[in-house]
Image 1: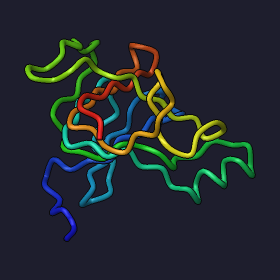
Image 2: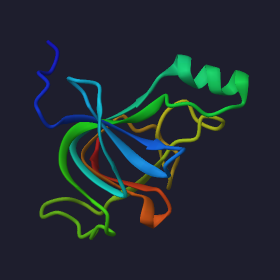
Image 3: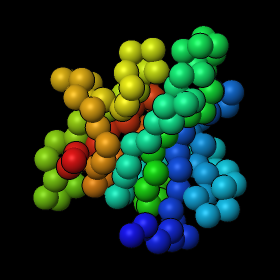
Image 4: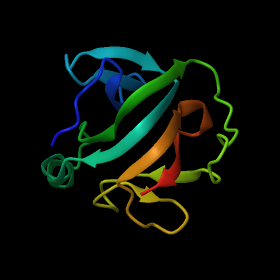
Length: 134
């Protein structure tokens, strides 16, 4: 059964033109925010393989990868990365269409598909940090 979308269900991707995170509402498909910091929970890391193949063929980036989840917080100041109570230390996550087919952990390059909580911060070299990876 598909998960019911809520008013906080969003898709977040890095906007190459604005150099900010774009936060798109999953029901309306409209961009709601452009922001420096986004915090999400119940995260899924998504990569369109057709979009990735287009990047590899054209050698030109396009929006084909991002993170879906429930919006927790957005802002324009550097986020505090204190580990939430009961969570292990965060794991840096990255994606490069020329190197990987999916999002991967930066430490061991294992594929990442889900996380309970993640933060995305352009002030910290476009870092995506994830907690409780699945």
